[in-house]
Structure formats: C-alpha cells, structure tokens
Image (cartoon, rainbow, N blue to C red):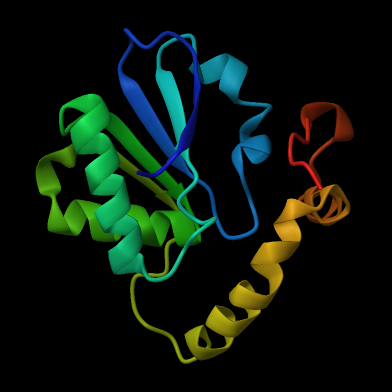
Length: 152
C-alpha cells in the first residue's frame, strides 16, 4: 500500500496534499504548522513509484478507502499532484468534500511528450539533498523552512 507522512491530530478533518514532480513533504514545511491547527495533514508518497496517473489514482483511492473510510475533507494538489487529484475526483467524486488545484494542466499539451521523459530522468535525483536544495533555491524557499529528511 502507498505510504504517507502525517502531521497533526488524527481526530481532525483530513487534508491530503499531493506535491508536484520533484517535490515532497519537505516543500510544505513552512505551512504545515499553520494548517495542522485545523486539519490532520497527510502527504502520500505517490510520486516515488509513479508509473501512470491511473496507477496513482488507484493507489490513492486504496489508501483513502483503507485508512480514512473512503472519504477525506480536502484533496489538494500542485502541478502533477493536481492532475492526479483531478483524475481521482473525476473517477471517485465522493472521495473528498473539497478540491484545491494549483498549476493543473487540464488539457493535453504537445509539450507533455517532453515532460514525461524529463520527469523520469530527474525524479531519481530527489533522493539526494543537493538536488532538493537546488530545487528549493529555484523555488525561492528559505533554507530555514526546509528540513531535508531524505537519506543518501
């Protein structure tokens, strides 16, 4: 089954965050303390074994069905995570009460033929702190907000 990181009180409504390609739970370090006041936050590791969006939604549906009785409060995705979230809700509309999408490509684009091979090539680099730090710097994330927990 899909693994996930969790933050906050499990008695609160569930907010599931799906990061984009090359990102992980570390990308939310700045906001997690703020949102755990009202939500139990989960960040599934859906992209670590990403094969297809259909495979990702199958894994997420299984996770939500088994761990959260088939329904969560909010599903939020960024970039590729938002495409996965949209596909999940399209297939299982009752899986969440609210959906938040940021940077979601809704229509197929010709550039997507280039993105897939680059994502496959670059994703393994996310195991390395130097790559995550470079990406964080590109995203203008301050170093004090980033706690890298990835082992080499």
